[in-house]
Image (cartoon, rainbow, N blue to C red):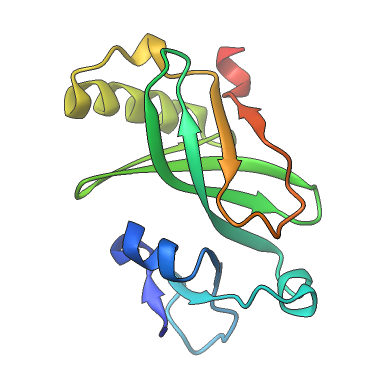
Length: 141
């Protein structure tokens, strides 16, 4: 699998290669992703991983997409739902944008934005030692 821009990453890409990282070559585009092999030495060589995940919203709706995992902090700081051709990104570090994304989620799906958080997630690659967990925005807790 070759490099791909984040905005073009699809569920099929995630199913084929469940772990991705940002390209570290300074001569490449900032938003270019590269697949990461499921080998410990390849995984720990990254600062941040984008990992295929399954989600369950607070209202019980199942979604699929990715989590953004910081290896140094050992935490997920963002989730992204892939809904058809749309992407909904919720990031703890930019809660104002995430709140607008929740509104967009409601417009796209017809579901209430109030029923999204907290989100339960489980990473798809079982080889990773990331336990199922919950995601919420700090500003909304």
